[in-house]
Image (cartoon, rainbow, N blue to C red; front, side, top):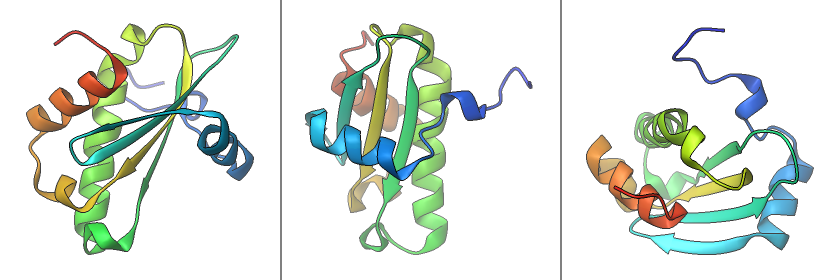
Length: 113
C-alpha cells in the first residue's frame, strides 16, 4: 500500500453499508457537509462520500469528494471510537479550500483543530 493511498479497507463500498449508516447513524451538519456516523465494534473507521448533481458538474463534485477523502486519510487515526462515516456534500462545498473542509469536518467529527 502506498503511504498516502486510500485503501479499500477504509472505504464504504456496499449499498447496504450506506443504507445502514443512513438509517442508524447520528447526523451532524457542519457548513456544507452532512456527516452521518455509526460506531464500529471492531476494525478501522471507513468513509463513504456522496455528492449529488446539485453540487455542480462532475469536475466540482469530484474535487469536493477528493478533499473529503484527503481529510479522512490524514485524520483517520484520530477518530475514536472507529466508525462508519458517510459524508453528504452540499453545493457550497464545491468552492471550499482544503483548510475550510478540514475545519468543517473536524468540527462535525468532534476532532480538535
